[in-house]
Image (cartoon, rainbow, N blue to C red; front, side, top):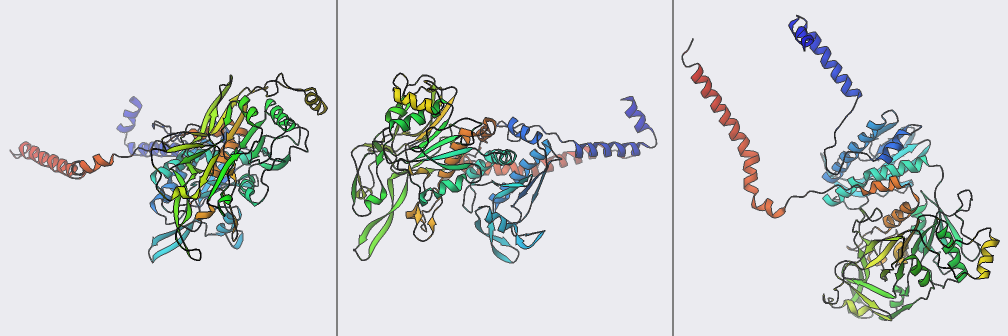
Length: 579
């Protein structure tokens, strides 16, 4: 304190003041510090993200394609992205570099080629906008993505998963909550040298045609996807040193019965730490069956998986879930055979599952569409935890087998009294130490077949196993258009080109399932960041509008006038006597 007093007492006090201000400003430009006072820690990076940034060996270049004149929602998205990238730069400023550029700009070292060409080649989807500019209106294509480069590799980072021109507050909130996860996942993928191995099972009637294009497209960047024939392979390897090892064994819509030998391979794969992802249709119920007739009967496929899933803790029922929250289908409502009149009506056999946000897998995703979905029951299984990932809405019902599916059911509005069930489970996550289906019942020939492969029989799992069971085989398949070919996963072919066309979050659900099964727990946990959307009470805003307008506009002006009047009054009284 004495030193400060001496400085200001000297004649050159202004010099020392300028020097002090220069030191403070320089220190502020070099050292960044902030205090996150938000309840949900909006501006705090997770430990997994901090570790990724700390251990970087080379520079990371991030290009964000949100530069230009945009509507308010995309401007806010750009600002939120800038704030998050600054958080990353604060952790490792020498390695993190980012910039905002327009996708229509030309690439410096490639004349005639724009960044938009690169984005299209990487599979980025554009959103067409009409924006207001000085000359009037202008059509723009917006790419709400970022391109991350590291050590010669590159990856797209999705900043907004929707496709609408106007970003709602809820969608904006979800995009901000997922931003850390999207960047951390992309960076980890660039750092990791080997991709997880996913096996697509065949041999039991699983589809291998154009309907699986969506699966291949979704997995091509982050996973090694291969075909695995259960009949031709003696076992499913989990050995980390084995080049043919399988990290996730995926079964999608089998139509033929599984033999005991095939079930034993799946069982021992799980006992050795393998991960199962199963999309099963327990009933034969296809939309194509209704193209020629107005009614069809759904009946059991008899896949011979009931006892195996029962042992693991779940049962897929032989029934169908109908829901008032559902997708649309075109129905003939008039006209004649030559000129039928169509109208889009809700098709209760195409339920839409809204995320409950109770787990990392289903957090911050949109509606997931299903087709002829079965219900799922849990079985009391010691050591195995069950988590419902998808369930029906509050207005749903179950019809048991043999289930009659009729096109006439949608001609009249369904009676609400029939749809009196809620939260019917249709997708389940099982985690824990599983018990083998063949414990105390494996035959000598089965034991000999395992011995021949160099493996011993395991009656219990050797660690924490994970199984995801979804009672709908169509959920991860895509429709095929005669004109356009395979459609993206989650789009209903029958609504393409109509006002009801929409891409549901089936792809995101599939990827979230895979990421939870194989990726690092710390990174997948960043999906749990929850930013609370604190909306104003609309009714109170309407009732108290005038009051708050007065407080925010008129009151400050009145206070300034009041203090000015008091100040002038005090001055007049103080100097009324003159000099």
